[in-house]
Image (tube, rainbow, N blue to C red; front, side, top):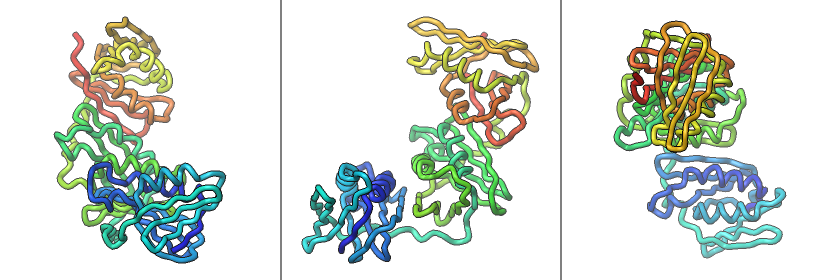
Length: 368
């Protein structure tokens, strides 16, 4: 087998698929990248059996074939010799050692038998939803920060996707905050749902571009497959029933305020500097008809910011984890946001005149 390939193309492909390599002590084949050369194409594939990424690039395939190469060693070497788009030669010797060479570099790496590599799950039937690439990327980024990180409730370590009609919804919660986002679908769907691991979605978001290309996302046999241009991502879904979230978000509110998002975000970040080293990153909000005071206190001192708002309803005093609010604000691009406060000071954050995002945050403690 012999292949000539552009170094920058190969480096990009190796970097992308390496995200699916196993990080645990497992079978040696799962530490490898599978490389298949045929028809002037080079396809790289890596998996840990839960997540798999496949990337195809153009290449001059002189003699076709396939091999397994240790992913991290191969990736580190390619990254170090990938300069100015030079060509790299990949050639297999009789002793199953891969010779990697460029104009000024050469190494050989031991390979493993391709026959020992796990088979790719067969996915790609009629069970799918179609969505613009940029909308899928935004949807993931709008909610993924709210997933749980501990193992006590495994289903909460994923994002729940539901496609129905022309709407795609994504939901995430860690028990202290709740995030929901909605985007339009390009094709009508009767009903399709799945809980997707947050790690897989994080890697998917990195692969997605801000384009209007329409992607098909297949949900079959407890797996998801996303087909992008020259790239595929497979992931095993989380098994089980996601929590019933319909009644989590309050429907009745005691106070509602409108505020400029940029002004609020800057004030919150400034006021919370004092409490960032504290476990709850606590900020206190004193809210009146036209004014909101945001303050924090720690062993280092106190900080206070005051901003103008428009309040409907009663004045209130409440406290939240500043990070929970700031995570929401980072992904909201609107000029004006709405904060609604229910009984016991739970807070709902939305965009004025839009249902694209909704965030529900519990208070840290009741302020008397």
